[in-house]
Image (spheres, rainbow, N blue to C red):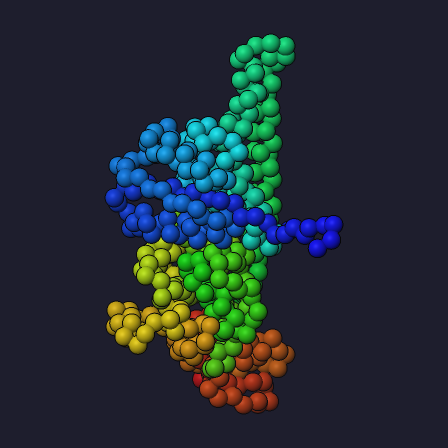
Length: 429
């Protein structure tokens, strides 16, 4: 081997213990919720070494779990050499501080919110995505600052040289002020980006292009579906929150109508409020849509609950009343009996496999049906000097018959309400 022994440079995964409280209520059982928390932890690079649950009517104010369970988890931390303990619900700053004291350094104590924020921080690619994550992280950290400076506050209460300057509290206030200023700066930057996005969205609206947004639970296959329908190469990976930033691609339907498809950030149950608030400008792509495709993983036993979680977020951002179609993806993973049962239970849904392409044409036909809802048949005469409008007739409308006459393009078309408004001055008998 020689004088030197090679060592692996691969990062060593942190050893994690998951903790959840079973309150005997809610749509998700504690086992289901912790199974999802495990996937989140693994997505963030951790190795789950144990899962702990406790039955409680309500969390304990001081430590979230009972004192006996705290001792039990502390023993597990030592025996299993755990690096981090992850709680399935958001902890208060005092609960987090008390648990960190019980488990002792260097073991970290975080909650589901902090874990999701960390994953978002790793996956944000665009400037807007990174700003949104930073904002959510700072909003999460701000109320938790006191514990970070407790050692300095302790020095002050003990007295001694320099203690009368209140160094702990002073540093705490400095940090709070810096974070508040940074939050204000991030919000202003995001407002500027949102205004730019609104201008782009308004331009798409005025162009008469029919807009479709893909929303759904994380890892339901939205990006794969976008790639399948538009021939794009958007990043796809089998992990939670693989894509955060909205991606818009155009697509020509068989009838000749051009539409846009936008892939949005994936949802999850117990999605942190700070994240929903921070990502509102991104989620606004769903608000601006003419049609929302709610993508669900047909092979997941919790598909119905995941769709409920998607509906909750859509309600929260004010997009609940937009026309929508449920799309069950990954139907290739079901057997024939399961596919038949799914079709009977949800006759209005579309069953597809974005990976294999099965059902893609049926979905495009359904989108075309929705896009033509409310279309008007009319005949227009567009002068040759209105070249852009002639181009829009060919791209945005279904042309039934056309001829080039001396005055311009005479065409019988089926047009959307917006396009009909544009073309009304050129309508003829």
